[in-house]
Length: 71
Image 1 (cartoon, rainbow, N blue to C red):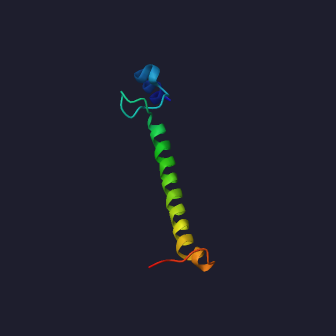
Image 2: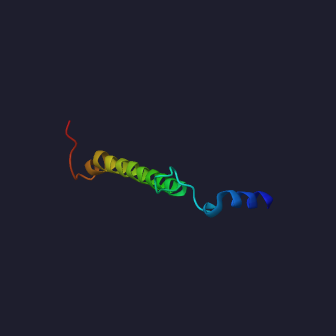
Image 3: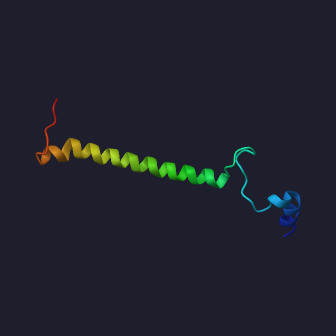
């Protein structure tokens, strides 16, 4: 518990608050981690969507006679 007290004395009012990426940017490290997590999830959703669309256009549509692949 002594280390926590020393840290609290050193940091003062900033104790317990999230640390910013840069002092002049109002974004905390936690917010940046959430942003990376959401954009990574969004990228994977986009990749899966593209694969599903490609399989539908290339295989499912022609198999059901919805359209024909040219070339």
